[in-house]
Image (cartoon, rainbow, N blue to C red):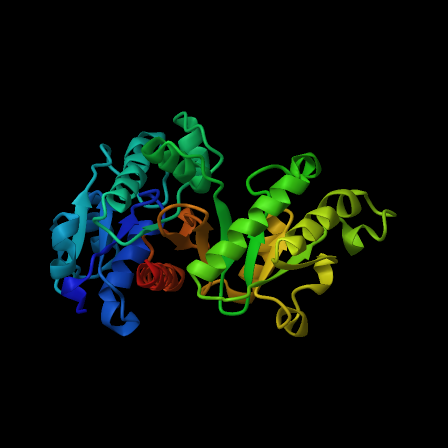
Length: 341
């Protein structure tokens, strides 16, 4: 199959004042070097044109639809227009852009369900900007699950995984304050998360027998109850249930000894209890190479592992490497999934 015959990936704009436009443009500019599959950018062509001038790069921008993106991709940057509605200044987020940011994500999801793209890659959003506009979800992941429910009538449990060349890590709880983590954790939540991870590692990553290393919540994994009870009362019983189901899960393990080289050789994915317990080692071991993958959804979704980086938007110093990795991984997962259907 040639690139022109291939369905594209959908690439959402993200916050237009952030580095999403920067890294999308530079990724396309270096498409041959990165061997990128075709994608269609869903966003405002005017924002892209201004940003290209600011970056002093020559990128021909062509408006098209998903059906035309693959044939356009080799010679021009394909865009499905979703207007922002206001003038955008790089590095200066504005609540008025929230509507366009949300519409870009919704359009990408619709294209996935309509079979017009192979999956979606999302550029970074600024949650604070969206919250100011009335956005009712903790983040991208939860919003995508809601869109999938509206489309199918089914409830989905989305699972966030940071996937890099040295580590795959999953937080069981995501965008909640640290003080709320102990009460949010439950045996059922740990079990459900691990089930989804194990299944998607089999179907989307071709790991026949995935090994799940489960971190404890407390220092030293609770030290037999001396430093908290959650490890004994919640995490250990969850692991026992998973093992009864034939899932190779083990722990709870002290998180401070899980991420050195020898430890990582013993598992395929680290299951962590909260956001930073997973994302700090994942980003430390592969900041430019790691990709945010959402498991448990009925379509492929990846994103870079960084934020909007308003401070460097439009300055020509944003690196596209994580976005490139996200595009490549979305393509690989979609092709592996198609091969099994």
